[in-house]
Length: 617
Image: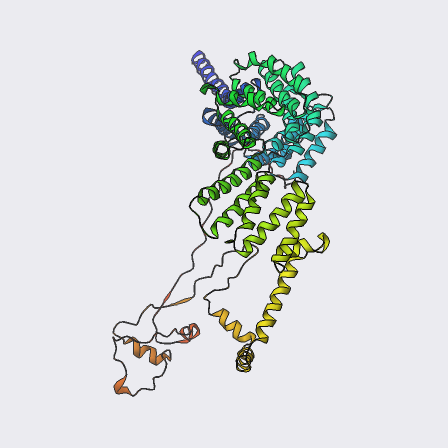
């Protein structure tokens, strides 16, 4: 029995040891799978950064991998409490939630990490991540608190510079160009921790373009061109530099750079963008006759959405300069139909609207007669003067509208005033403007336009003049009334009172509503001890029951003519207090619900609580 007993003991000990090893391996295997899922998701970000692109939002398998990492890490916290991997699991969850843009969940996990592991090895990165979380939810004060702790505990941390880059990226996405410009400059000025300076420099150059700081942007782009290892990054920087040089009227340098990047354009499928830059440079030099055919003959394979919109915009301005209104309008419509933002989209939209007004008036003028003719010419002239920058053509149309004998007096006065503005402010011919001003004051002395011409610029209170004129008209109308009409008007005025006006407003059917400025808790009423029976007792006349309780109003009709039971009776709402004191009504007692008993969970002996941030150790 001795040897046999030893064999049994050895087998039992081996089984126990194997079980312990299996349990220990399960913990580390679970965390290994969580880390592997997180790393697989991070590979998508790293590949985008290698291509000098902004990382995409997690989706598909990348998003699923982040979620797997969160679930696996939670399994460590649930199944193996107090294990040495607890802080690793919490930090992994915080990073995964941050990547999924669940910033508040990431904050909760990091709060648990700081509360339970104040000296964690992840403290430096965790402080940076927490500051970033609060920044992304808009809590700037809280974000700065964690960033200050990071600066105090880790003064040479690489995350100091990374914070400025993240602020710049967020501002760049929101098109807050000033904030992005400042943040990127501070990031590039850091002594250490600067990563991907060429990518950040190109974004800084784009901020300079949007802010029209071309002289500041060219040196930044030169730095990117000289230091980047990416041919595509260098090409994009050169293309942006061409556009800046054109705006700075450095045409010769821009031409030389265009010739340099043309062979590279085919590699990056950007032939259309280079053609646009070349056309803009030609237009800026006054060589529109060369630029227009270049844009009209672009190959279809070059016409991306951005190229199509940009080319249409340039052609629209070219046709506008040539006076080809219909062609310009069509090109502007094409440019505005694209989803890409044009360089000056508001100006293009405004010009398109002015062209539409002019072309509509021109089309209606063909079949117009009588006073419509000068009115349509006035509309054409307004579009030419105030929208299309054609003061000479506008002045001619104003004079034609003024000379037309069929013109309405208001239209004629407006046409004279338009002619004054055209000659005085745009054509620099003050003598002609004075002639039209004298004609305006002679023909239409009471018009608002005559008032604007006669008064000094500092004393032009057009609204006051119109109100004063209205008061004079009312006084003249009152003076012209007969005694009977005046007496009737006084009688009507004496009958009016604020109360009458208030009653008239009450009859509009509008209701006032209570507006609560803060959320109110739902009102909960306890059940009554005695509930009234819904209906009469069996066999009892409900009318008689109501009479006996005093709930039915006493009728003044004799008994013989009272309505019988079963006919339509007038509805009277009873007093709720009378129901409580009434006798003779069957009631049902509603028992109070018993509180639900909570089942306590059995905790394992090795349970180690994760304290919330508000609890003390």
